[in-house]
Each structure stands twice: as C-alpha cells, then as structure tokens.
Image 1 (spheres, each protein chain N blue to C red):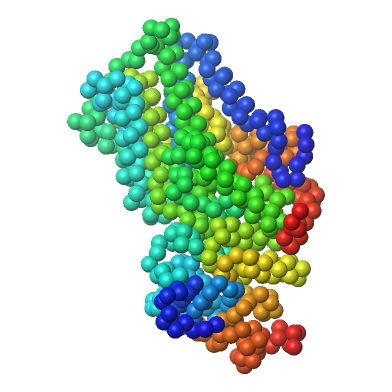
Image 2 (cartoon, rainbow over the protein chains, first blue to last red):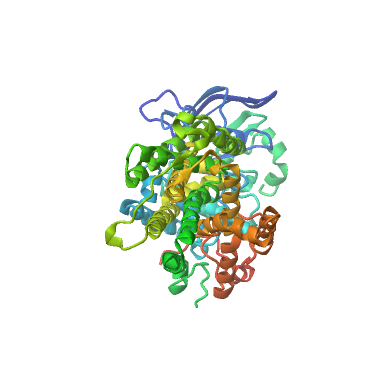
Length: 267
Length: 359
C-alpha cells in the first residue's frame, strides 16, 4: 500500500490520519494512519485489544475519535450523522451478528437496500402505488442477493431460526446488497467450520474482483485474512505495527510472536 | 396443502388472514341490526377504544415503544371535539381538525421525549396519563372544569334510513376500518420494515440508514392521532365529556387489551376494544363487589392459556393445521416459539457457501 502523497486529484477510498481514541485511561487507538488508495481487500489483524474493531467502529461512525481525520473518497466521515453513513457508500457487518432477529431473511436483506427518501411512513400508510412499486423492486433485488449467497431456500424464514453459518451469510448479504464502495467486515470467519471459511474466502474474493468494492476485513484467522487480502494492516496495542502485502508482513517479528502457531502451519 | 421449504403459505392458505379480517368486519357490520340503541352505543364505545388500540398496537408491536399515557390523547380528542362543536363546526370538520391537531401534538410531545430512551419515554407517557384528568379539571376555560362539556347529538342523514345510534356506529366502524388499513399499509411498506428493524436492533438499523428519532416520532404521532380520533368518536357517542372520563386506568386497560389480543396482529385492536368496553361490565355481572378481581383473573387466565394473546393462539392453531409457519411472528417472544419448526429445519438441505453456478 502506498502512503498517499498529497494527491488530491484522485481521492483515496479511505484515508485514516492520526486517529486517536481513549476509553477512560485506556488508549484504544494511538495515532493510527493508513490509506487505502484504490479498491482492494485490506485485512486488519492483531491480538485482542489491538484496536481493530475500535478502528472499524470509528470508520462506521459508532465511536468518535478524539483526534485525527477519517476521509472516505475525499469526504470527512467523522462529521456525518450515523444514519447517513450507508448513504455515502459504507456498510458493515457486526462482530456478534447485528441481524434483525424477528424478521425474515428477505426483510433483513431488504434493509440493506433501505432508502428513507423512497417511501416514508406517509406513503406506506396510504398504500401509495409508488411505495408498492418500490417494495416490489426491493423484494426482487433482495431475492437476487439471496440467490447469490445461497439463501433462496430460507428466504422467508426468521433469521433467528437459521443455523449460525447461514445467519452470517445473511449479515454479509445485507452489507453488500446496496453495492457499497466500502464494506467493513468484522470477524466474518469466527464460528465457521473449515469448509465454511473456505467458501467465505471464495465469495469475498469474487465480490472484490467483480465490483469496485473495497473490503476492510477484521479477523483473527491469519490464514483466512492472508488468503483474501491484497494488503494487511497489523495492529498492536492501538498502534499500527506494520503495513504490507501478506508476503511482506510475515517477516514482522511481533507478528510472528503473536501468530506463531498459525504461521508455523503454513511455513 | 403444499408444505413449502421456504416457510411461506401459498394460494388459499395465504389468503386466510385477509379473509378472516373481512369476515370480522362483516360480523361487526351486522351488529346494529340485532341490538337495541343502548347496546349499539356500547359497541360504538368498543369501536372507539379499538381505534385507540390500533395506534397503541402499532406503537408497541412495530415501534417497540410503550405508552401508558394514551388516555390523555383520547381526552384531548374528546375535549377538542366538544370545543369545536361549541364553535358550531360539523362533526366531519372536527374529525379532520382533531386528526391534524392530534398528529401535531404527537410530534410536539414525541420530538424531545423520544431521544431520552425507551424507559424514560414510557415514564413520561405515564406522567402525561396521570396529569391529564387534573389538567382537564383545572383548565376550566378550555374544558369547562368539573362540569365537563356536552356535545350535540349526531343525527343520521335522511337517505340512510338508520337510527342515529346505528349511523354513528357505522361511522365509527368506517373510521376503525380506515385505521386498520393504515396500520396494515404501514406494516407492509418499506417504512414498516424500517420500523421493525429499529425495534429489533437500533444500532444495525442506524447503520443501514434508519433515522431513529424521526421514525419513532412518526409512529408515536400516528398513534396519538388515532387516540385523538378515538376521543372524537367517544365524545360524540357519549354526548358528554368530563375530567374523570379518561384517567390512567384507561391506558392500562388499553395496554392489557392489546396484549391479550396479541401484540402485532391486524385484528388485535378489535379484541382490545371489546375488552376495554365489555369486560368491566361482564366482571360486574359476575361479581359486583369484586369486579376488579374478576377482571384480573380473566387477564391472568388468558395470558396463561394464550401467551401470545388470543390471536396468537389462533395463529398457532393455524400453523399446526397447515404445517407451515407464517412469514414472521409479528412481535418477538421471550422464549422459543411454541411451534418451532424443527422438523422443517431438519428437512432443509444445508446450502453450501459457494455461490450458485450460473444456469
């Protein structure tokens, strides 16, 4: 990854500059700086407490850093109200699943395509033709996403009736449904079987390849992340330790220390 | 009947809920033909409470917000109707005005309060519910104080050939039907989906574009509007409104009625309206001295027999008969659903993670 020289003519997908955040006395993020210049898959790795999820939450607008800037395609993200973040092209998944539990797979996916302007409460109450049409479009689009993710069979089931692996897929589907520019993926491989992780890898690679989606993937599974990422950001104790391609990053001593077991399996 | 893996009814089976709704309204429509004027008046009160219950049902089941102050908004509607009648406005004009005023009132109250969180919101509504009768008593210039206000009778138009009581009943039934249709329309729409989403997981809802404050205000205002219209109907039916007409026990009764009917179902409001209007009378006839106790026992028995409400019980029977689940349960339940489709889940082939091959 090239640290972007001040080349404003082509705004980077994501530019994180000097981001710092403390919770009480704990420095969760310490002067974090990196740039994703163009659409690619970026892996964010590090031990528990390294600040990976915290950073993700800052980009998603859930946490407000005390210092630094975060820019997405040239726009300052930190000033935007949370509910507008999806509108500028950033979606996310949640570490412990953030699905709408009582709703069906279809409805969860359709929420990935929600646009408040296209059908507020008034239109709904009045059975407006435009609202119905919009709803039909949403359903069709959601069904397509479901098919892409192998969820067509369970389209109308409540998501909390599904096995864990399927729920994770619904969560991913909801995040990609609107074809966002940046998807923040928080621990997608956790809790999945080996086979499921393999399939997830294939799916993410395919998504990244066919569309101009940038994926920022946080995960503990070193093999999984190195398998899909073009670049890796390695964090420790709130700071960035190293940035590089998977091949480059393996030589980092701290990383070898933390991931010794996983690396050994692949050396 | 086909057992579908996707868990969705097909053909006639899917139409049963809609048919049941039509049947219910048909039954309600023929009531005035069999009852005396006094009983028709009672049923009109039941319709009024039903109208308030539509809004409350939506607020709680879809919006995830609880209000125990809806008696205040029914009172508002009734008093507003009386005042407008005193200014010689026709009842259809006051209908429109009360609807608009109640909607605005809902926004004005909701806007600052919704941001305080669910618990504080409920507490504020309880406050409103308690304060309403006192306000009605004290604001003598507006409400006539302890003397209350009278409302002129509504006459049936000549062409209808109906008694005034029956005419008023049908007007009320039309308003109830309109409110139910509004609720169903909202539920089926994108906005309804967003509403349920923020109820289930507000963080995720926000992450996908739902403006929490605005949608919560909107549903609260809608429920206040319906409570106001309930007051409009109540006032005309009663021909009189007084400070003690709507105290906080009405809110509690409405809540109990909605829960016992089954949170989230389209027809719950009708069950709730009947509950609020008739159960106190039935309880008194069973035991004049201990009618409160009888009412309590009725509630307890129903909740033991039908945890998801009476309509929930019907839904579960329907599920058992058809072997399918409905698309989704209207409201989250604390424990696993009674008819957990374990056999259906076992039957599903485990979908592979790999994307489908293009055919």
